[in-house]
Image (cartoon, rainbow, N blue to C red; front, top):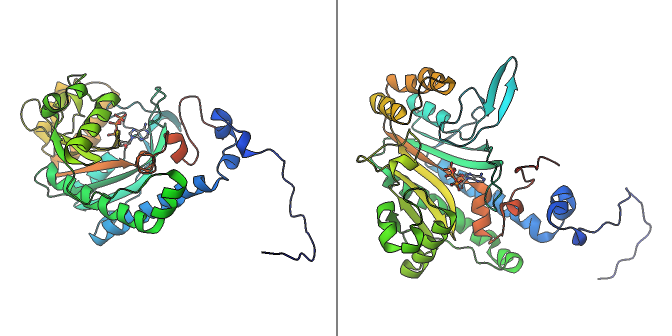
Length: 346
Ligand code: ATP
């Protein structure tokens, strides 16, 4: 191509600093330069397509999209650490999940809702998978009988969204990121937590919570045994899950996580909707008589006194999902502007 210029107009000046010289923290400091690379722009184009496809899928099934408050009086209902903020003359905190409001919608009779929004976790640990602020796709529905319906729903949602991403960006993702977009065509294997120990001895390094090493081991097992890079781990010990999780027998909860390429990308569960069972589970966990329990009693437990259908849901961490899909080494790459311990600029 030959260009014949008739003139040059300077619209603005630019320093000669090059994105190629940036590394580690300076890449995050000068994120606007870092993001000038074609491969970085692609991550956010893919994120846009992914969310659009998920939204399309849910809207087709008559889900209602909500925008719930991000400031709340309630503390941490799930055990995750919260950021406190001044709220006029009171103390409030940033929500670490919209789940309470999703459940409020179930009590109100909305039946099927979702939200795509920011959540905040004051987690001091610095890993390649944790951010202090990230985007969560939360889905909640009523009239379920068990977690398997939630996993069926999530599986169909993920299959649809990944197929759309593959069709639109597959070739470019291969070229820029060196990975294929995997669409789970066959059913995703489901492994109960109690069986993890015998099936994957290297994953049983803890009696309850799965460590990251364990998540990687279970994914390696699923790939080898089922030729699948996705795997659901289900029925976690009740002690490992938040109080609102429905329990099956004494020590098992109706819960699941979806792992993909060694990374936990989703958590979900059937929620306990019977107020007496909820009260018992709250008391068992010792969540009584502090400010949290005041909130719990007055605003959470009270809600269920008015009747609520059986329900449940799940949350997909958008940046983590993109990280797994695009084979990125860190959530810092898939967060537009990363937030973590010690990092709240730019
Ligand atoms: P983890 O055990 O990895 O810390 P979690 O069990 O606390 O995660 P949930 O509270 O169940 O995660 O959140 C639902 C989903 O949100 C997770 O499956 C994950 O995709 C995402 N997620 C959770 N915490 C973070 C975080 N700090 N940064 C980015 N994404 C997160």
